Length: 245
Ligand SMILES: Nc1ncnc2c1ncn2[C@@H]1O[C@H](COP(=O)(O)OP(=O)(O)OP(=O)(O)O)[C@@H](O)[C@H]1O
Ligand SMILES: [Mg+2]
Image (tube, rainbow, N blue to C red):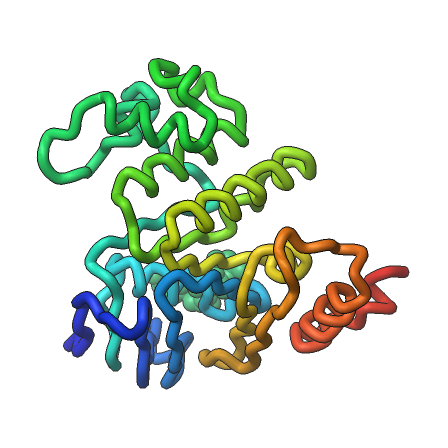
């Protein structure tokens, strides 16, 4: 009963219209509309359980039990919070996993170099740190040369310092590659730091959106940064004063 169309679009990297996804008769996504421009960096916020991962899985083509229109580029890649590496394959083989054709080790090495992990090309996944596993997962997304990169809380499990490094890496990769990015995050600061536009999902739709017109690299001490952060926290139902207490 899926009425979606997955095909490349030239004017938008993502075009979603009238999207509905129900589980057991309950619409988690309910007549949602979303457009993302080619090369645009969009962050998606929303309380736990509001349907962010469900939306991402639909855009990735992993869930087709939907109603509505979903137009996405053919070349897309997704990285999840848990890096999902196959423990019985070395890092470089994990990077190439599922790629069409018979890409050589050099393709994996190039991507690992881009994420600063070429020294672990032959490592087993269980010997990687959390940040390294996350970078391997990013390399796996990059070898797909995506026009759309979907990231579901990719930094959620990282310690503060590793997280800052990973955020910088994603910002760098995005600027170099020029692909559209949709980043799901719980972290309002991360959203304002990285995105051109921040969306807040609620009630099965994009309930609020905010353009971030701050120069890059962004300065979190800029008062406009704090203003945006407070506004978004408010939209998420978090009282900034209470949060600071
Ligand atoms: N396969 C499924 N079967 C039944 N219900 C599901 C399924 N997948 C998701 N849901 C429900 O849909 C709702 C949205 O889930 P989703 O994982 O998209 O939330 P989320 O916004 O990503 O939350 P979080 O921030 O906690 O990751 C939840 O209530 C969840 O229980
Ligand atoms: Mg989720």
